[in-house]
Structure formats: C-alpha cells, structure tokens
Length: 132
Image (cartoon, rainbow, N blue to C red; front, top):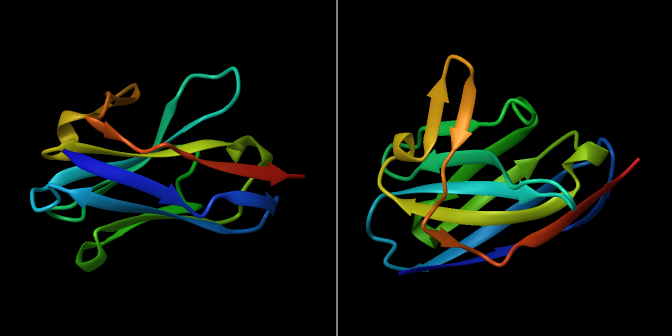
C-alpha cells in the first residue's frame, strides 16, 4: 500500500506559477510510475505528467508541455509539479497517483496520442484555480 497526500494548491493569476507537492508513504521502496492528473468540473479526468522513479523518465500531456515540470525527491519520498505560465484552463482539482512498475504500462504513447490508464493509488486532491 502507498499513501499519497497532496499540497500546494491555491489561487493564482494567469501567467503566474504554482508548485504542487505529493508526499508518499508506505511501500515506497519499490519503483513506481508517479503521476499528476486533473479533473475540472463537468470534464473527465486527464493525465498531466508522469515520472518513473526508477530512471527519472518523464511524460507530459501536450497541453502542459513546456509549462509544467514533474520532478521527484527520492530522499523525501516527495513528488512535485512545477506549474509555470498557468492558464485559466488549468483550473482543476489536481491528484497525485502511483502505479507499481514502469510508466509504459500506464502511459501509452501511440501515433495518434497518449492514453493514460488508471493508476493503483490516489491522493485526495488539491484545488488549483487560475484567474484571468
């Protein structure tokens, strides 16, 4: 079992920055695919970014490439999402998630796009609101 607790959400103006954190506890000694997802009101949940703790390989949704950066601090068992140049469409509840094993099992990249599969463990979420 892995427990995940997000923090760092809040309100920010368009063009600003925000950093989300996710503290992991439990069976964190294994290698996981750690990810950030988001869900806006009335919309489906979507994958934002992921990182494989074993190699540091990263994956991003097209909508956040060049603006968001996912990173990890293995010593602190903490995952981060640095959000720069945020836009009103980034407003959503952001969730931290973990899946045992490499990211290529749950982040499926094809010629037509990226498919984000369900992860095993989820946090409670942190709200991000971007005003124009």
